Each structure stands twice: as C-alpha cells, then as structure tokens.
Amino acid sequence: MNGGRDDAGDDLAPDELRAAEYALGTLRGAGRARFEADLAKYPDLQALVAAWEDRFVTLNELTPPEPPRPEVWRRIEREVGLDQKAGMKVRHRALPAPPAVWRRWWESLAFWRGLAGLAAAVAVIAIGMNLLQPRFNPEQMATELVAALQSQEGSGVSFVAFYDTQSGAVRLLGLSGQQVADKDYELWYIRGDEPAVSMGVIPVDERTEIPLDQAAREKIADGTILAVTLEQKGGSPTGVAQGPIVALGKATPI
Image (cartoon, rainbow, N blue to C red; front, side, top):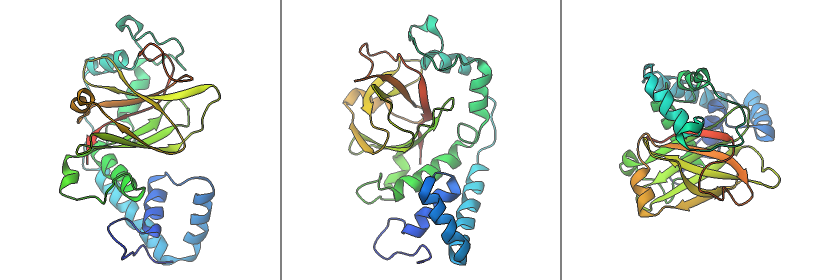
C-alpha cells in the first residue's frame, strides 16, 4: 500500500481516493469488497479512512439545519412536475410525492441540511475521478459548482456533476444505476420559478461532458436544481419532463 501518497501531481493517489470514496459511501460492489479486505490488513489505510470520515463529519457540521418556508415546498413540487396544475404534464410519476417526502429530502444529510459539507465531499470525489480537468486550480475552484444528484424513490440511480464556468460545460459521472431497456435518462436544470429545461439524454455508466449554450450558462448557478428523469428512448419529445424523477440535486459552490 502506498498510504495515499503520490508524487505524480495534484490528483488524489489511488489509496487516498478509495479511502475518500469508502468514507463517503460511493465505493460499491467488488471494489468495496477488495478495499475492505485491504482495510483489514493495512493500518495506514485504516488511518486514511478515519481521517476522511473526520473531515466529512466536520464539514457537515458547518451548516446548521434551517427549516425551509412552506412556499419552498410548493415551488419545488411545481418545478419538478409534481403539481400538474403548473403545466409540467408529468404522465408517468413513480410515486405521488406528498409534502412529507420533500421534507424528508430537506432534512436529510444527502440534501440541503448539510449542503456545504456535501459540496466539499462531492468535490473530493470529482477531483479523484478526473471530472475537474485540466488539473484544478484551488483559486479557480472558488467559483465552480458541484452537485450530488441523489437517487429518488429507490431508483438506484445517482450522479455527480461539476460545472466548469470557464469552458461552459457540465461534466457528469454516473455513480450508480443501470440503463433501462427502451428508455433513456434525461438531465434537466431548474432555475428559480422558471420551467425545467432539458440538457439532453445522458448515459448512466460513463462520464459525459455537456457543452452549454449561453442561455444555459447564465442559469447554472448556486441554487440551480439538477434533475434526471427516465424518459422514452431519445428523451422527451415535447421538451417537457414526462417520466419519473430518478435523481435530484442542487448546484452549490465548492
């Protein structure tokens, strides 16, 4: 084991990255099993995991809970298509989501309560997975955005997204989930009270770079909601979300 040290450059060393992913809970399957086998044998690896767990806990404590106003629930329900009166015309919702469901999301660590800590954690994984390319500049990162698109209603689909303001591109990586036969995943952004706008069909099993036009660049900012829906092959033909929401997250500065 190399103890997480790497003189090759600024990227996280393999052990360091695996320890961060393990502590964050994004290391799964055979990779997780192999890591746990190594973890039982190497004290330096155990120390790395403990260090990352401490960092994540500390970061998540930086932002205290803040109860959202009732109108926030109504706006989110409207913008992601759970309010048919608002004109989203969602025909195939996985489950009708009452306000209590939205409250669970707001109160969970994976969403808004620990947003500052989550953003930092996502940034760590994004760096290690080379979503921040070319090699990141710490000063420049102060103006960049990340989002953790968490699985919704048991979909098993999750992504991490990084918005590069210099290139005007969104880099997206599927962390979990599988492609569905005769269906496509479609990415949307929602800014304030405006309608959801499609960013195109995306794969769930590889990295994707989505160049944005000028209008979209002006909308992707702190607080912009990113959502993934499961649509018919080729995506929604109407430009309006028609399938269930399978992943959801909020853009926030690193």
